[in-house]
Image (cartoon, rainbow, N blue to C red; front, side):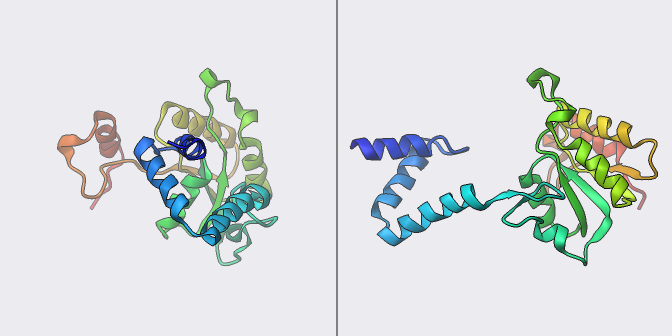
Length: 196
């Protein structure tokens, strides 16, 4: 293979979920693309790096001072859904069910990786709860050891405040099968059952 093409494939393989075959397919697509298409891709990548920043309120990605969600007056400002990453926020938002505000921590507590409370956006969350008179903090963190530790830490910081702290429920996915569900998910499903 030609040097520049090998370089492009090598760079593309760094993307999550992109292996040798996919990287090669992408590289050949770019090779056969028009000059305008390639320039559009270059511009889009440059814009993401140059123009995106964190919202000054919730720390989601935006190209303005305050993101569109935080600027939307129709949203319920006394409820905050706490997520680990902007991708998690986008997943919750895609469900089109939650109409409150968000807070992106940009990580979870992990002593093994030396990630402590000051390394993520917990203090900013506590300030928002106080300042914005939040009535409910919904912890939508991944059900990992680190996610659970972070949820417990946040709950403990909010215990003396006049705010409800809730956790999203975990359970069997729609269309899932009990036979293939892991024991922890089954246990959580039983713990979070609802009366019909």
